[in-house]
Image (cartoon, rainbow, N blue to C red; front, side):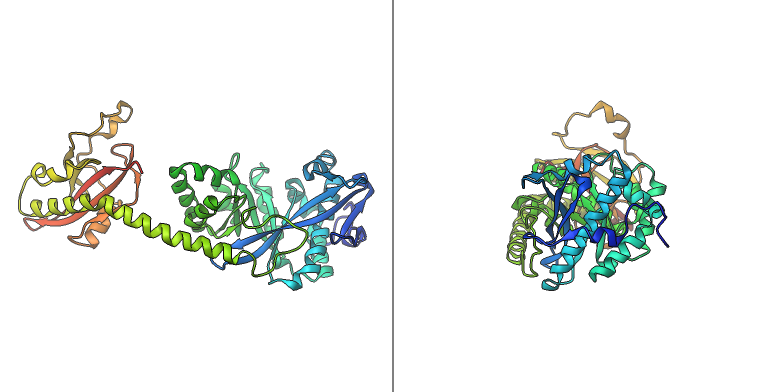
Amino acid sequence: MSAPPHTSSTPADTAACITGGPDGYLARTSTRDNLCLSSHFQPIFSLSHRRPVGHEALMRARDNDQRSVSPLQVLDSVSHDFEQLLELDRLCRALHLANFSRMQAETLPGWLFLNMNAEVFLQSPLRGEQDFLLQTCVQRGIPPQRLVIEVLEDAVQDVDQLQDSVAYFREIGCLIALDDFGAGHSNFDRVWRLKPEIVKLDRSLIVSAAADSKLRRFMAQMVQLLHEAGAMVLVEGIETSQEAYIALEGDVDFVQGYYFGRPGANLVDQGAGEALIDNLWSDFDQRWRDEKSSYQNAVAPYINAIGYASVLLSAGRSLEEACDSFLKLPQADFCYVLDAAGQQIGTNLYAQAHPACDLRFAPLADARSARWARRPYFRRALENFGKVQVTRPYLSVSSAQLCVTLSASFKVDGETRVICGDIIWNC
């Protein structure tokens, strides 16, 4: 596809603006009030590979007096003129590719993450950006498959147009990353439709997760959902060891932030971050062992009590007698029995310390004949006959609070049954 005649510049025109300097290649342009633009690169690490797998290119600017100028200020200066915005966006991409090409031979082949203005990204099919990017890649000896185009996920309202632009860049081999996911009005529907190769989680998520254990579980579940949607997950803005640990614990693929490496004029080498990540893995292994031991100690009395209840029930004892020892434990909430199809027999048998019913959830209190066949605690109890099963914490639809369910299958009068016991989980 050839660029439309009204395109503001060609790769050759832009490349001509790039000259050498003490910090690498520098770009000068009169339309930017003689600002000097340069590239900085922030490394992106794979926690599994224990090494950098790419760099995000960031624009830096100085005025004639060598004073630093904010990139946002540079962008704001052209935000009301699309032609200048397109020219600046192209100039930055050409500049970053030039610098990346100059240094890449010293590192492992890695990705180059390039930010594109959302408006420029949307107009790319009409402005011949395939030609521009391909020609620039050829000039610099970088295959387009090494490029990850970043676009702000919530900066675009027209999802159909966004989808067309994603397909347009993917056609030449580029990867797509949705940036700042989880901030503003993030929408999982866009992930399903756009199928980005990478989703970058906004820093606000990792900060919130570090402050609240419940949000840590939520972030881990979000990562799992994004993985199931076919996207790799990158957490950006990691600044502390605790945030790095939460990212590792949450099964994210890639990390970026000051804790792992600040932006710099040069690319990091392939050994960068290895010791830091190895220490993180060692910390994870130790914490996992400690948390597993603590968890097992916490649930052991409940496991024994539910196992004992299943034995008594199989011998024909009443539910009240069988569950007495379980319901006397401090966090026990209630017990109930399911048939072989997962349908509840009778009502819940509550502990004396059961919290007063929240009237807002009163319609859920009566669980007689409710069917719980979808629940993992039921399926796993049938698959592991006679052995007590324990769930992960989840929100109970019966009590509308976080709980853990223990379950065990047994037979009485030749019929399969499952005894279940819920404990209130405030950890």
